[in-house]
Image (cartoon, rainbow, N blue to C red; front, side):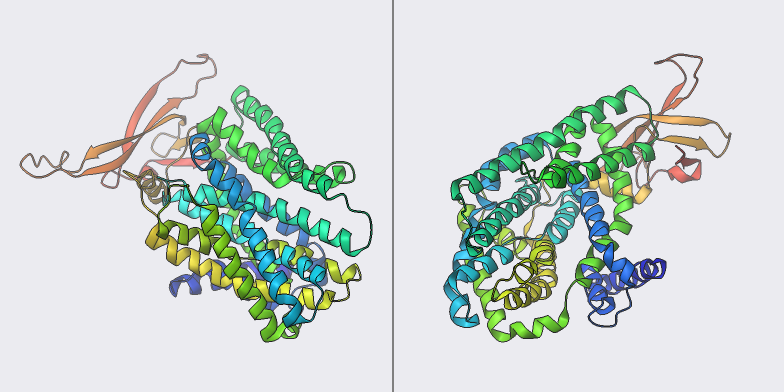
Length: 494
């Protein structure tokens, strides 16, 4: 299994680099690496790796959903609340209707089997959509109207809604008694319990982190471990009550951000570094599940069914955004962002075949084909349309995030060592300011352009001095100021 992980890292990073050089999303290259290295093409992955693939993919998805939670702000959620609810169900319903209309004639399956296929295909992929939305949020794109947050929140609920519909259709096919209203009632129950189960540990962890001065890596690992336990509880409680644990994972980050923003940013930055490896695992292993030989069974008819479903879905997405305050270009971006399919299709595409559905092989073939077609095309579309359509906002915070990334500055709570004197200091405050570019140069007669800068307050740790006491000083960092790393190094110890 170790050599399989090495292949994922080396080939995945190479593909990411090559595709970025071609101005394409790097994740598309990772998807192709997964298909080629998977058991259905070159078979370079060890059997042991494929056995634990599901667990690795889940952990990677948890990492990105935690990052998503640490980017969710209450004011933004209040603005996009109604649109997020409509986008979580209307597009999926439209896509199922479109597939039910054309699939029986093209694929020679029953109407109920077409509904099962529609439920599988109508789920948007958080594995593809969420990382791209996080990237836009990191860079301040679409911040004024909260568009990335809208898509992120809606796509997470969309999966819950679709999986409940899939369960209903499978129950109807099995001939068993299905209480339709009880099943539909599981949707709000699942969402509510999932969020509640995230709020409780979120409040506890925020209290724990503010009471005890843990080092950043320990905080991050505790949050990650708690989120993994939350997804395990979903499986444990499944026989009795439905729980949308992935929404709970996002809720953990949301609560910590609400209660302690400096700590939340610190944890988010560590998760961002962890995501470099988790991203490789997620996309390569998702694509490795794609059986390229099964795709041929779907053929042209399967492609037409997928395209018709996407057309209906696009109409549903556009309609669900009425009254959301978006112009037609921004609505078009939301339509494109709702195209990618991967995670759910890979997870439940083979369930009908295993359950004895007569056309289970056809359903699996179309599900696999949908991943192959929509994951890379959707990712490319999101990047291209997002860069052209999403606004930067007024004095976007992206300028500060860009500056921080470029200068590689520490965050509040991190400890640093002076290279000149060997003394240990702690960052206890950071402040974003706008300064005049001509001020330092003394160009009084010239126009002064505002540029971002970050003030960091250093505190010299002295256990004997007591809290709130000790020497502090403030230093400013901008693109024109001396580099932080000229005189300091960050301590990543526990």
